[in-house]
Length: 94
Image (cartoon, rainbow, N blue to C red; front, side, top):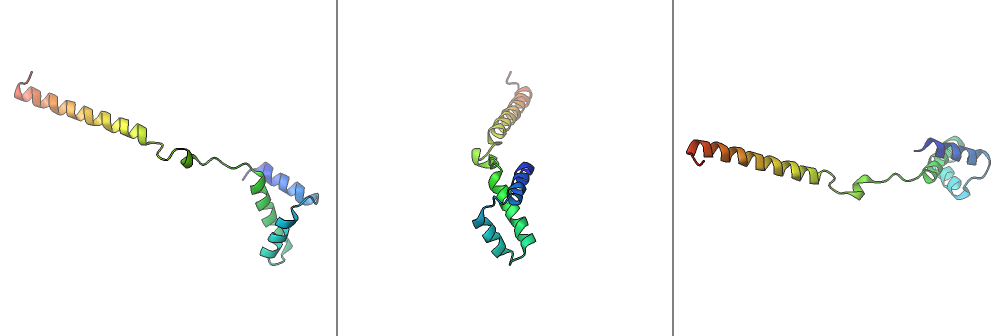
């Protein structure tokens, strides 16, 4: 959560520019405890104010798939070249 969003939510709460519906919900969930309701309100309001964090998994499902395929392919080609070179040397292919 963004600290500036929490500060803005505190200022809203202190200046009586609160979201009445959200405050009522918080009071109901806190069973009438004003302190707890205030903390719940500040937390929820700050979450509403702060910008949403980009979900990197949604952007690219398998971010390391491309580099892994390249590395495995190069490794496989390298191993095949070593085996071919070793066998070619032992069997007199070149």
